[in-house]
Image 1 (cartoon, rainbow, N blue to C red):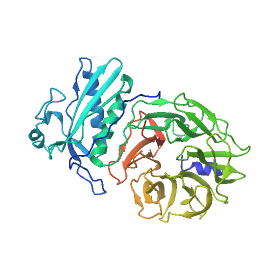
Image 2: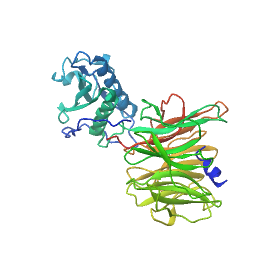
Image 3: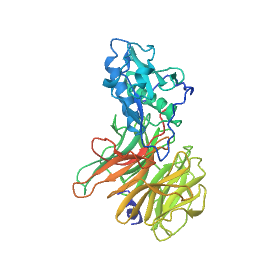
Image 4: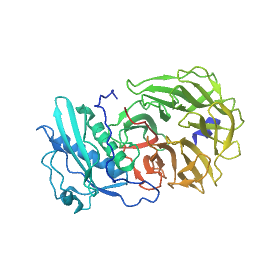
Length: 442
């Protein structure tokens, strides 16, 4: 539907968390993430200790989420707790390193949880088993009881960062299109969830078609395309109070495929006018519209570079659907895709080094990545229909839509890392499409 849309166009409450202190790297434990990483790092995660009588269930839940976050990356392998030799009765129990080397644990995570009124307090330490060292000082975080999952994700983010040397992505959210009904008459509404599919909330009803939601740089607003007026229009939604407003339009036109600039001050989008579709830019409040392309072809799916200086987009100006890059202020674009097949839905990595895209070739759809000059193209997936990539905040993982064939087929969200490994479905509890990953939450 998302790739086909170009044809149609041509025709959380704020959370207060304790400050996060960084570990100082004191030991040699480190995963160097390359395309060749195959064997996950074995780690031990004893159940976090309940330091107050009412914290037992919370400690177990937090331990479970941390383990799911780390093991879900494909870079880590948890050693089952029934294989552990040492047992921790208190948070400050000395580590018996020989007990952990005996079961081949390379990293050890020890933590504790306490309930203090309506707050949850979590503290934890990370150890390099083979060097026999604690990696940095222990750390403590606190939040409201309702935010316990965020605490677990933040712990996992710190551990991931300490071992891999890059930022984490677990404390983030995904906005997407929730789908229901038969394939030929689907109902669609915007939904938002934690990155792992938990805490689903619906942002719109299913009274009209919605497409292509996109987060603002700080995650407080979402742009999307709505058909509530009968034609595609751009709407902006405030995630906190779930209020939305249509952005200004030029009468007789259709606007779609919006995306925020990295500083949040502008919106780039497509506008169809008189049978021609070009890229435009406007201020985030709807003023100062500026035309960026002027071609008899279809220009759509724009995405800014992280520094805001360039835009990548798809166009059929060469006769087939391909990827182009141009200055964010407009000008002559440069084609970057030259492989066989058609390319669309490009998205610039938050690291700035790669562009993810959808490719259609020989009756199959793929999610792929390439350098910003078009070199080193790599296809990460292949299926009946894969499309619409979105990047994790650290540029390590891509989420996308996979559609299954047949009358009973449906859309589902999947993720894959940029090496093409660890392909897995995201549990949304139903059909889902058009994911957009938020930045890390504050």
